[in-house]
Image 1 (cartoon, helix red, strand yellow):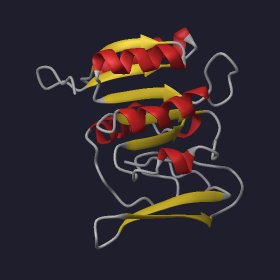
Image 2 (image 1 turned 90 degrees about the horizontal axis):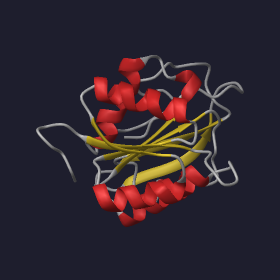
Image 3 (image 1 turned 90 degrees about the vertical axis):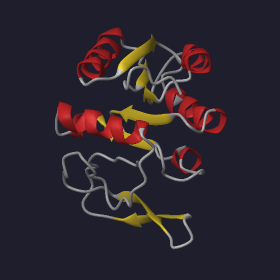
Length: 183
């Protein structure tokens, strides 16, 4: 990891330059050291290999197809750099890669719906927890974010007595998803 002078290092990945700059400014203001900003998954992999950050903040949809390249990159980073926290940001819930993202446990992983983050403090708190590799039981979709109205399906992760995580899908609430955060 590349913590310098007590600051957690972060790489921000978003194809939209304005969003990337905004997230970087918020993280900088929140006490993180922004080590790199990138616009696609390949640049993200290069930056993570070079910088070895404490945290990666990545948008789900990135070039070239603008589908789930960021989420696929997050899964790969978890496999190649297990000590790096991964905070995924999305305007949509993309469930296809979530089991792969959480295959090593929920420790050091976060997933936030952009429109449901309760505010800057909630975003920075989630980033700190994920970067620190915090482990917690997650039920429903709201940990440090607005509770919203529930989700059609939610991920439940809880620690077992043996230290392993137990994960399962369950039905929850109405149809509009809220924010999710796994730490």
